[in-house]
Image 1 (cartoon, rainbow, N blue to C red):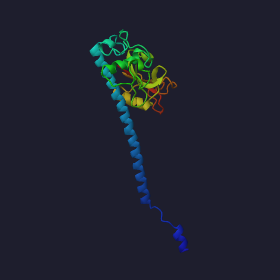
Image 2 (spheres, helix red, strand yellow):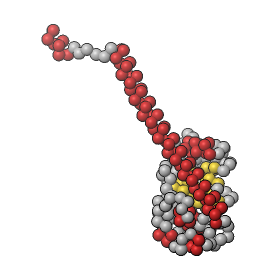
Image 3 (cartoon, rainbow, N blue to C red):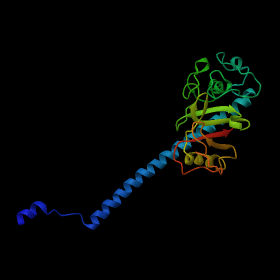
Image 4 (tube, one colour):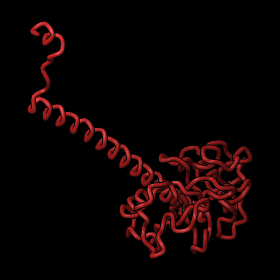
Length: 229
């Protein structure tokens, strides 16, 4: 019997040892989750920094040339001869990713003027895609610009995914969109200078509930954000 016990009778963990193991596991899991939260927060802050950079660059361009990027009808003469001129009507015309549109050339004008970094190929080589003439966002997708998008009045920056000639596909979760909105505006998706809508590639009320609030129970990337210039 004694010989059998040496083989099969192993000393188990005490309650104290088990508790210590559980505490250590808790710390490790908590550290991983906290690390993910910090990474997520940093990514959203970078998106806000990018947007602020583009707003300031647009204001600086307007102050210097008395015209909007993309719409500037003397860009080839006063900035770079390889640039395509706009029609000078005071409106940035066209879809954000449409080839040859003022909305696509908006970024080329800003970059050529030295106000932002290169968003990719310039001028006639721009293809109307993120990183290929239009700036990519640090969280994925990218930024486009359009006049009166989805019934909103005026010029707006759009943060979303590519859908045809538009950049208004669902990119952010409602929680992510709400976080950016709170940091930059009033935190309400249907009012203010930051607006959220359902991505053009998702079903209705996926991002914004029927009552007009962020649908934070949905954790899918279904939101597109609009930022008024």
